[in-house]
Length: 88
Image (cartoon, rainbow, N blue to C red; front, side, top):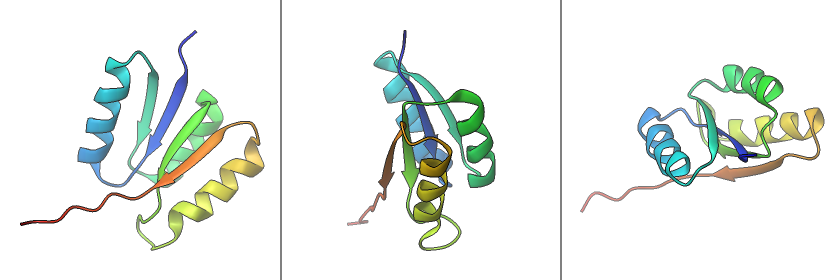
């Protein structure tokens, strides 16, 4: 059985790049760019890992959703992340 991973990030480019990498490495991946839809996907798909953007519409919105996911399912691993890019 493949491990199920949910990616929630408001940047579609990051979602797509991460999803492609994980699928290439034989993970079953679900993704959302809307945090509200991410909650529904979390409930429906029951992932073993959630990769969650920390800063979405609000600076700490990712932490709010991480707490919400933990209340829904304490077994899933919630991994908040943030990506930074420097233009040089």
